[in-house]
Image (cartoon, rainbow, N blue to C red; front, side, top):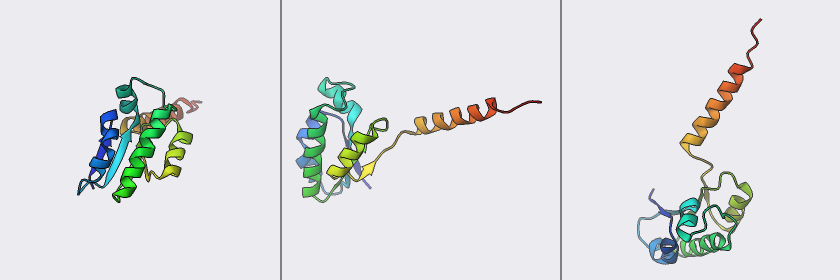
Length: 116
């Protein structure tokens, strides 16, 4: 599977061209990097993010490709909106996030051990 990642306004502007490339299976939008490129860091609800998904999903549908959602693990409602629009993969976190959460849980369990 070949997944290309859109992390800039330029990539979104070229969504149609990129989605038409033979061999590309999916486009994943890296929201954090896209927002940084747009000068809108942290503004996940900005209309330009919605527009980027709408344009990318339309281009991918036209060319039989899929769209993935990344960088929104702390905003499940927004991720759900993009899934409802037609995105078909949801990245729910990173390896570091998963390992950190598991380690924190294990530390909590150890702290709760009662010594008599």
